[in-house]
Image 1: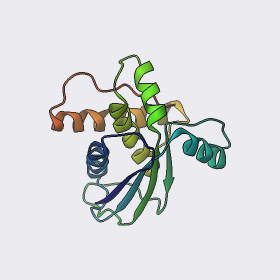
Image 2: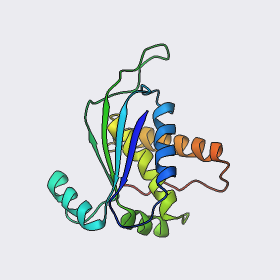
Image 3: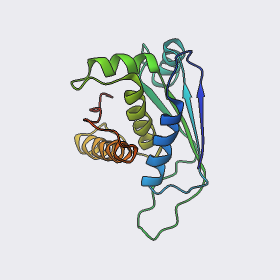
Image 4: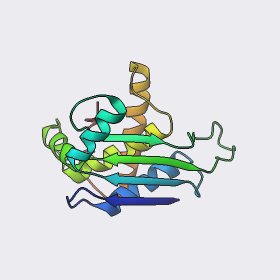
Length: 165
């Protein structure tokens, strides 16, 4: 799996954890090991510009996903996953820090960025949360991936609750 993490935000973030949880999520979703992903960490001003340009919504947001080859997880366990460019995930640590502090189970900016990385990966794979059933599926999968990764890392305590909208 080729995953690039590029921090352009000016904020110190745990880039290794972002890389590791992205790799874990893609492996868990059975995405081809030669697929490519880019994660870009930007400041609030840059995120706001992207949010306005692509979503026509004001203010910065926490995470945006820009799919390339529209890869999807294989439908059956024995299907060979396709290889390709997954796309870009853009994260904003300023928004992540605020969301983590305001969450019901308060958590760090880095924990929120890990959650948002998985959220972004799922969006790249075609998951959405517009409808209640889609939201339940996506957020359930998101929680399972974050919990699985945290367990492999030997991290204890509750996983961050989804704060993305």
